[in-house]
Image (cartoon, rainbow, N blue to C red):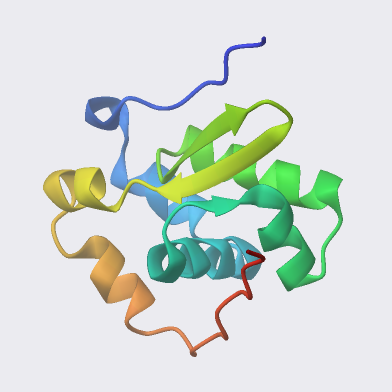
Amino acid sequence: MRETFHADLPDVTLAGVMQGLSDPLRLRIVDLLARQGETECSQIYQALGITKSNASHHFRVLRECGLIRRTQQGQQQSARLRADEFEERFPGLLAAVLGNLDPEPDLVRAD
């Protein structure tokens, strides 16, 4: 299996994080992950109405700037927001950003 790059938080810069959050679609992904916790990547891109390749690009940007961590079990990939780690590195940043977004509906999870 190919190793996925995840940024080490001490190496993450505020400028890099802000660049990662500069796209409205990435903001929606971060908002969904903040509200729902770890979520299957396919559920996210289906809920947002985007293609898998478009979603993969946005997940990569969010991973490389340190905002999310992606995991894989078999064929299933999931993403989670690194909220606790980010709060330690940049106190209050995620709350300030996410607190000013228009609310989005939660994803419907399959049982």
